[in-house]
Image 1 (cartoon, rainbow, N blue to C red):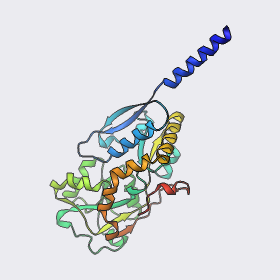
Image 2 (image 1 turned 90 degrees about the vertical axis):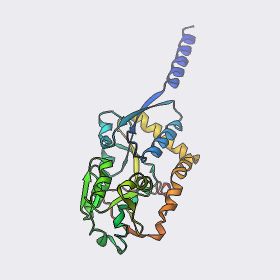
Image 3 (image 1 turned 120 degrees about the horizontal axis):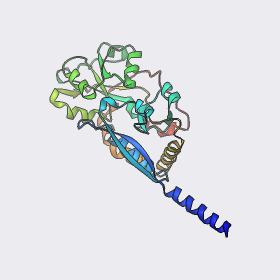
Image 4 (image 1 turned 180 degrees about the vertical axis):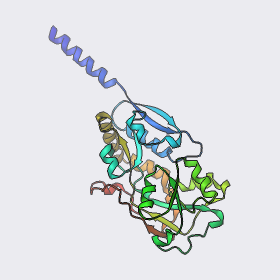
Length: 278
């Protein structure tokens, strides 16, 4: 009789554990002008729902200027998307599925409307370094441009960078092909346009990062990504958001300038197929 009771109790305990949901805190952007994170948020929901576990998502809202990996350290959020580098991968656990398939490294350039053809005669990186660049003070890209010898002016505030460009605080504002179209439209009232002659490229992988001691979440994300890649739902979501934007960029019609990224972590041969080939 005791054995029967023990078996029933064990089965009940297992069923309760299986039914228990895992709460995951995700960052949400509080900015009416910033469309950059909509895809990432949808992808997070897809990956967590594909993990095979009962996951409850708690959205935590922050202004753009507070979006920093330190949010992981103080447990304000559980997952953070960031451009990777060697130091970050030592400090946090990187879920090594490139959420933008490497496209964040392809850049078009926002300029003032009167300077639309400012880069018409630019042929290489040395020509480009004659112009000043604007970037966020906490962005990985800032280090990339500075390391290559560009003069970089920065701001902690995303929206302020467009104002700085308009007011001639710098000449060029390189933006991802996935961001630049919405931004040019949103800030067109500041006489900002997309420069038509040049595109930039540097290796850049955007990964989700998790605290290294969060073993359960790491496993959930690894499982969810594998399922979403294998069943095609990752590709489908990516293409839904980005295919038209890539076509609009017309990279084959532009002078493509390569910029080194010495901070980038190496990509394994198993990961290479996950990246888009333009």
